Image (cartoon, rainbow, N blue to C red; front, side):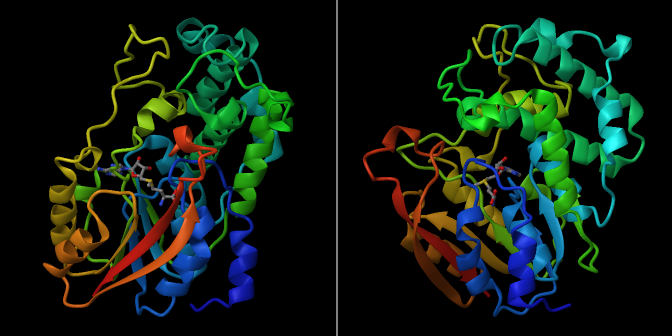
Length: 349
Ligand SMILES: C[S@@+](CC[C@H](N)C(=O)[O-])C[C@H]1O[C@@H](n2cnc3c(N)ncnc32)[C@H](O)[C@@H]1O
């Protein structure tokens, strides 16, 4: 199903944008410009993050498989990529907010005085319990989890869980809205983003190296390794990641002030393994058109990436655009104007 540009723009305006580290939301027009001429019907977005690129691809009428090993990214992808029509009704939302004596106090006890008030922590215990016990439909559950994570992120100055206490309180509306209202608003935003593009779409929660192959194209946007900034998604988002999986099978590091847990190991984490990571994943997807987003301050360099890709693909082209990274990725550079980098799209066919 082909989609017109105006229709696509209207659709993309409904994407629940966020400050997710490394989100490609700002460069979707650049990606569209270079992906649209390629011939493909099915696509795997192996590192879907905020879901922005999967949402673009869904808008382009493709059959999309969105994957991320973070549970809260996965719940967002289930809610707005995989899901073709299920929404959470206002009555269901109020039901989720209703106090429940069985909710327990895990969040109140574990995270007291760290990120939210006692009252807000009690509400999080309630909503989390109600989602697990009252919502039978798994798409409704995904919308609720994605909305809960979104509400918590918006209620945190700078959308981060790397520090404790309420610093940077700047009077923004997002910080003033109650957590319950943030949750209601987040459900509305997610509900509005749900639609059917006439294709079978899918959300997965796997290590990218284990993904099924066979889609016509794969889009790779792994974390960037750079000497300048860290790419630890768990350090930034552990609270919402823990929340959507109810801290099951993760070990909270009690000695840390933030009560975070260990990052999920990824070959894309370090300078010593990242080249191997790229060749392994190129090899894995060698039968698909391979597209890669990367930036000029990342390792490997542009030239190295081209030669790595040429080992698996005959034709390799690189497109580039200037991009100013949102802070979070390069927080320490804000003000120095050095977070302006070249954003690359490598295409191997
Ligand atoms: C640069 S972000 C992707 C941003 C995304 N394209 C967007 O527009 O929001 C990288 C993502 O890769 C995920 N990730 C890192 N290593 C992974 C792995 N081995 N398997 C699956 N996902 C991984 C992270 O959780 C993170 O969401």
